[in-house]
Amino acid sequence: MNKLLTAILRIVNIVLITFIVNMPLFINGLSFFVKTPIYIIGILYFFFFNVFPNFKKYPSFRLRVMGDGAELMLTFFVSFILSIPIAVFGFIDTWNNVFPVSGYIVYCVFVILGELVIFWNGIIRVYLTSVQLGIRYRVLGVALGLVPVANLVMLMILYVKTVKECNSEIARDELNKSREDKQICKTKYPILLVHGVFFRDSKVLNYWGRVPNELIKNGATLYYGEQQSAASVENSGAELAEKIEKIVKETGCEKINIIAHSKGGLDSRYAISKLGSDRYVASLTTINTPHKGCIFAEYLLGKAPEGLASAVEKTYNTAFRKLGDSNPDFMAAVKNLTSSFCEKFNEEVPNAEGVMYQSFGSKAARAHSGRFPLNISYPMVKKYDGDNDGLVALTSAEWGERFTPIYPKGKRGITHADMIDLNREDFKGFDVREFYVQVVSDLRERGF
Image (tube, rainbow, N blue to C red; front, side, top):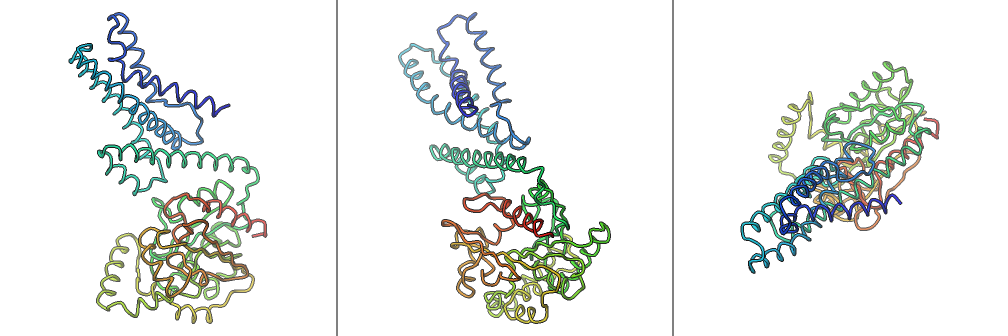
């Protein structure tokens, strides 16, 4: 019934808005005393609609702004299309001297301004609040904005993606509310999220995307590794060991559960087995970690010109010192991802007794599954390492007592970036937020 009522109100609004923006033409023959109240009521309704396009309930202010923006975009699209034949008939009447030229000019200005207000009101709301559009669709929207027909097609693409995002978020909010009392992510020990190489933990742009908020909503207590973006496994492991001990001593939690992505899994293993963190760690869950290294990385290091490698290393280290790293070491990080290093590492860093180890790995279906640079690295990694996520081979990600491969569904697959929600992107076949909710929920059920 709510959907039916929403559909009816939408149709009524579109009809009224189309009438309002075309008022100078529709009520031309009426007397001044009849026109005036119609204009006043119409303009008041127009501005009211632009503030409150619909009365649908949303779980957050962001979703309300985005949902209202989508409603405005749809109204603009339909009313604009309907206004075209109306304007043509008006032009014919003007040509036949039925409608004055000055009146038609006023009408054209009126309808253009009206439609522009609706359009910009909607598009600005959506651009400011949508996550799914990303940079790509925002740029395409701007680029095609002045291209006839293509701009309307692009507008509908933006509308559809926005509505899907809105509906998805509403469904997720309902799911979380339905299980709120269960607190399914309230584990015995808090969760430490450990990032991978070439990234930092940032409050502005979270490495783990929308995942942390989802875990917190379901009862999880979270901390972050906050190690440097690029360093040797030994140095990163030392930073993590210090962080782990600090968390345990300051909170009295006794132990923690680690969830680590990419190289963060190797850093965590080193801290646990070599630096005494095993007494503070209940479990280690690694996500797309290259436990067996990357043959491709080995090949690349062997083939890269020394001058180029030095230039890249210097540029990276300089940039990340400015971003907060005290001693970034690009080359050490890369060398620690090679198959030869990991083979020796696995011999020298065995699993610690008393710590539960488990792992997950994914693979992309093709190069176009990922964005730059994963779309470029995928075929090269596949040549040397086999099925991979754009960086790490599926076979390399296996570690611990339980390994769960996440296979692609459809033509897309799941990339290295998808596994940490780096692009804040929803796609069919894999819900990254729910994936982590279930991982943490499983830890809870197993007593961790």
